[in-house]
Length: 353
Image 1 (cartoon, rainbow, N blue to C red):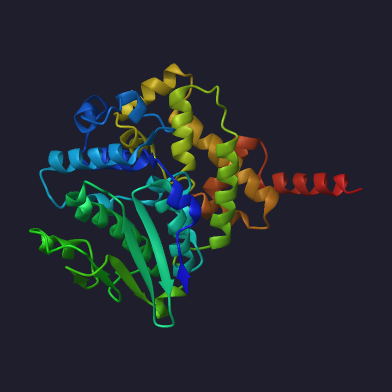
Image 2 (image 1 turned 120 degrees about the vertical axis):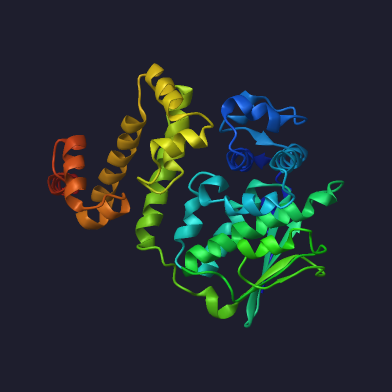
């Protein structure tokens, strides 16, 4: 079975800014230093920090070239590829990581990675023996950058595979359509399956027996529900809200519930924790307030729209125990989770009369 890239992936003409931000974080750049990475791109620091910014393919390639030079390491693509976690693939990219099986996760990956870049396309071909993932990279005039792009692209997929199967991916094989680079021994620090250079085309093979491996992440239905709720909340973000406030809300909604802390949010914003706190304070907000606002809304959605236990909801929202969650919910809504659910049930019963 051949599975070509969706039409919208083939025609997309822009690249999401999130990948370039990941490069800046890999280089440990601060907001004031971003101009070094942006040289020759025509992108301002303000545009780089704007969540809505889209890059041309040429701008993205120039940023990658700058990043390799700044790193002083030709194998920068290996470091970069390992850092491409689901949130870098766009809002709520963690859907692929919560898919019920490896095959479903790879299908989701086709949407979350190639659909956000006009220089990379993923194609898959399934047989009874294996799934072959072909890496199509379009960079005319920049062929010397091909290894770096492939390293990023392939490692993103391999990281996803290892997350789903819960162990190192050793059973498949990575084929690279370029000669063995000078740093080829470093590949073993990042890639655990056999690697072949000078291949006819770049691809990754995955044995069929792995494709239906259940995802080791717990409660897929709950994660998909969380995804739906977060997507709805993203769509309803107040466009009149202050810039930093909305930016932090989007970051929080782009990560599994309760996982992002203030230090990480500051790092993702290329500023210090103190600077983030100061900017939010100027907008009459704080990281804690925004985080609890989102958790409170998600908790209410779970209690109203699912039959999950309070203990299960507490775990999904990353509370260490249900008692802590119960106290937090009472603080948010002035009722216990059980009382909230009962009131919602009574309201629905009343509405149906």
